[in-house]
Every structure is written in structure tokens, then in C-alpha cells.
Amino acid sequence: MIERHYKEKHPEYTEETLVDYEEDIPLMINTIKKKNGGLILGGSINEAVDGFGNAIILGRPHNDSLRHLSLLKEFGVTNFAYMVNQGKTFQATIDGDTFELTGQPKTDYVDTDSWIKVYCAAVMLRDFDAISVLNQVSEATFISANLKPDSFDLALIKVLKGIFTPDSDMAALLKDALLCDDIDDMRLPYAHHILSPLLPLVRCIFTANAEAEFNQELREAVAMHKAYWSKDELEALGWVSLPLTALAVIAQDAKGYRMNFETDYIPAWIVNREF
Figure (cartoon, rainbow, N blue to C red):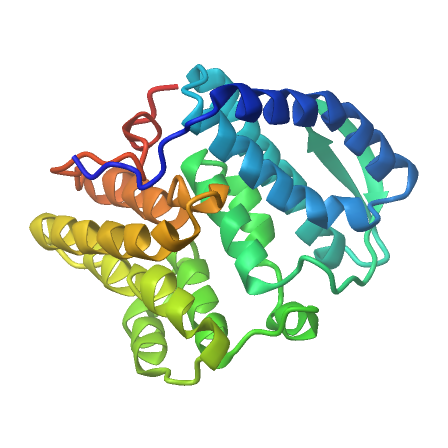
């Protein structure tokens, strides 16, 4: 068992934080409706990440954790649909509330890191319609984002999109990403510990009879995740690995590859679809 680096010492404070956030959700949705999106839409992605992490760390019932994971997906997909549907009216559903928005150009929270968080939530929930919307986000959107991508970020996005794009040349996409050495110096530790380990996992998924190798690479990726986030233990994004859980879901659903170890960073009930 690879245990989480963080142990909740004051659950009453975390519970209070989560309850306050849950009470704010209707107000957030109403603001999005009244202001046709606005800055609150993109910012809701990170708040939902925190909500999901808090629900997990508190041991809330699975339905509570799923609600927050769904909020991450719904706020996020709506945020990116805003770019995909510029000048067009589109339908959004967040926390059971369905309404219309009109897409417009935006540069906040349309960066590659935000996209990956939302993509992973959609994969974990097996929401292929949401994945389809995310796959329509153009490279130009990422390049125009406030947080600029480097070439590795863009290559990784192409790999993740390729998983759900028929007839993708995954070998070529993986090669491009693996050979890409244009990584921003400030992002190098994050890319090394969190993003780069995803590539061998995708390769294993697209390789026949590679379950043992997948598990070896996954175990190493979990260790890298733990090492990175142990330096920032209060960051909820580190309490569960969204990317590793998403790839474990794909490996099991698509290839029947089952994890041969347990870890707090990859909720087995999500991978096994026990919900």
C-alpha cells in the first residue's frame, strides 16, 4: 500500500471549508448564468479540485466525492465549450441545472493544466460526450491562454486527445512528446514528476500484453507523484492523482489491465466503477 503523504490533522476545519464551498455552489452557478460565464467560470475548476480532494481526505461517501468530481468536469467542460462555441449559443449543465450560454473568446483558465484536470475528471466518470467537447479545443486556445504552454505541454495534449481520436498515430504522437526537450525551466520539476510519467503509461495501454509493465510504470509514477507533492502537502491537487487515476481507468476499461497494488492516490472504487 502506497499511502498518501498527507494525513488530515484537523478534519473539522476541512469539513467546514467543504460545507462552505457546497453552500456557495448555487450562487456560483447563478452568477455564471447572469454574467454569461465571467471570470468565476474558469476559477470554479480549481475550487472543484479542492472540493473533490477535501471530500476524499474526509472519507465522505462515494456519492459526495462523485458530486465534486462531476462539478470539476461540468465547470471545466462549460469553460472550454465557451471557447469552442464562440459567437454561438450552447447548452450547459452544472450540478443538475441546465441553461444556455453564448461562447466568447477568453484567455483565463484555458491553459493546458486546466484542460488536463477537466479531461481526467471526464475520463474518470466515463463521460465520452465531455471528452468529445474537450478534444475540440484548438491548439490556438492554449497558445493564447494567460498561462502559456511550452512545446512539451502541447505534445502531451495531442497524446491525450489521441487516445479518444479514431485512427490516431499514437506511436508518432508519443515519439514527438518523448523527444520534446522544450520544457520551461520553471515547470521542469512538475513536468518531470507529474507529466512525463504519463507517456510510458499511454504506451503500455497501446501495447499488447503489457499489463505487468503498465503496473511497474504506474507504481513508479505514483512514487514520483508522492515525492513531488510531499513538498506541498496542503495542496489538494496532490491528495489524489487525477492523471494516474484517469489512465488506470482507461487501462482497465480498454485493455483489462488491473492494478496489482493499492494506493491512496488512485481510488480503486473509481477505477473499478463501483458507483
